[in-house]
Length: 298
Image (tube, rainbow, N blue to C red; front, top):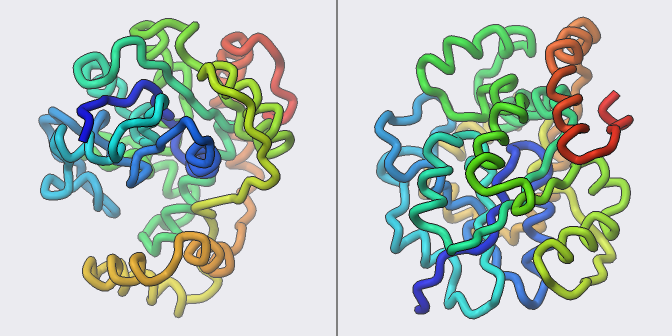
């Protein structure tokens, strides 16, 4: 195995369709995306305080990767573009910036996906529900964030924290330069994936690849029934069973099953209005960053 570190990082943000983008990138003949997609090494390496709360899974101390295990996620490393696609990276800039400098290739470039911060916050709430976790009502989910931050819960439980892109992304801009960071807007990727990908491949110095279809992955939503929620909770409480099901059921089929088992909920109007006001500065910051307005975030 060639000891090669990634030279591209898809750093997040979480719940912005980075899985869909990573799977498209992995189709390109000159790109190898980490397997698993999210090793979480850059966010977690050297973390002094353990992550807590529901759904710690990959963040549990016994599941954290060593550097050698992380490098093994890129296979033989022979393709020119190696991509770590951990959406957790952007959520922990204090650790991640230092780890990127220490462990990644010289001249590493970063890709970030940003979604309407209001919708992203609601999506992470629905994702927690879809996992069978006890997220309560959306207002309760928002109100409990300060205590969960104090208790060091993992980033999926921190709706405002992750959606404040100006705070999460600025440390990476300061460390690696704006010219080395490519921004993808989630809504634009959904509307016209080919144009977005053309710009991205140009940033990566690669030949254009025609993409006929982009599938949605990791859908969020409310479980369609109490039985589904109970089954999800039971399966996730049995790591051996969960691994066996993943080995037996192809990823595309698992994704279709997930999409069929949840349904979208409506965000309460008063909470949408509240978050729209809270994230006004975030939207304006992103518009200045990319040099254009974002009517889809209105």
